[in-house]
Image (cartoon, rainbow, N blue to C red; front, side, top):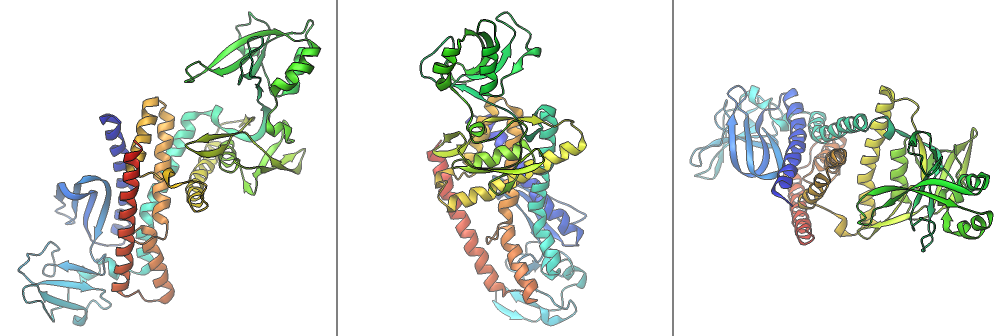
Length: 486
C-alpha cells in the first residue's frame, strides 16, 4: 500500500465517522442536550478548540479511527464544576455529580464529593437549567432518537452516494430483470477456425470487412447462431467474439470468419458450443424474473446480487411469462471461486429500462441500497453457517488495502461503490444489539421503555464494559490477521 492510498483510506474513514458523529451531535443539540466534546479520532488530542457560545470542545485526536460525541450526563452522572460551568475539575477541589436527577429542585438528587477526603456530603441542588441539559434526564424516546441518529446518517449518506452512482453510470447500467438473451461460449480445449476456449460469441457481422458495429446482430442464443450458419449461402459466417488478452488483464474483441457445414455444426459445434445453464434450465427470452428462490427482485443489480449470493448451489427462478407466473426449479448457474468462497454468476443478458427518469433513478437507488444492507446480514449469516471463514472478515487495515487496490485500478465508480458499501456497513453494524455499540444502547433503552425504569447504573456499566472489551479484543485479532495477509 502506498502512502497516498493510506491517506485516501484515512480521508474516507474520517468523513464517514464525521457523518456518524454529526448525526448524534445534531439530534442531541436539537433536544437541548449539552455537548461536552465532539471528537474525530481517538487517543491524545492533536488539536482542539472550545466554542465560546456553547462551551463545546471540538477535537482532532491522534488515532484516525473512530470518534465520539461526549454529552453531559451521558453516563448517568457527570462532573460539574460549580453550578454553571462544565470543565475538568482540579484534582484537589470538590465537585458535584448529577446522578439521574428525577426532580431538578430536590437537593437529595445531588451530592458533593471531596476527593481529598473521599467522603460524601450533601450539597446545594444543581442549577435546574443545567440539569435539563443532561442526557440522563431526557426521556427514553429522546435517547433512542439520539442513538439512532449516527447509524441513520451513515445509511442516508450511503443512499445519497448510491444515487450519485446510478446517475453517473447512466441509462445503460439501469437494467431490468427481463431476459434479453443468453451467452454462447466455445468450450472445446482445442482451437478451431480462430476460436479459443472460453470465447464468448458476441455479435453476427455482415462480413470480414464489416467495420460498422452499429448494425451487428447480437448473438442471444445457441439456436440463433446455428440458424444463421444454416441460412448462409455457403455456410460461411462472420461474427465477433470477446475474450481475455494473453495477460488476462482486459477483455478484447476479435472477428472470426468460418465456414460451417451442417455436418460440422451437428458433429463438432453441437458439443463445443454451450448454451447457458439458464437457457438449459428453461429460461426464455422475454421472461421477467420475479424471484430468486424466495427473494423478490426488482432490478438487474438486485437480481445479480442474489444469484451471486445464492447461486453457489441450485436455485429456483419464479418468472412472469406471457402474463403468467412460472417456477423453474433446480437451475445450476455458473460459479466462480474467489478467495476460497464460491459465488454464483449471471449467464444471461437483461433488457435495460425503457426510459431513464427520476422515478427510475430512485427505483435503482433504493433497491441497490437495499441489496447493500442485505449484504451485511447475509455476510453475518454466512459466518455463522460457516460459508465464510474468519479470513473473510476485514478491519480497517484490510479495508485500507481494498481501497488501495480499487484506487489503483482507476475505476472511479468502483471506488465510489466501495465507499457506499463501507458507509452502509458502518450504519448497519452500529445498529446490531451489541454492548458498547449504538444498537446495544438502543436495546437497553427499549428494555427501559418496557420496564418503565432504567437498569441499575452498575449493571449497565458492566454490560457496556464487557462489550467494549470484546469489541477491542476482536479488533486486535482482526488487525493481526489483516497485517499477516498484507
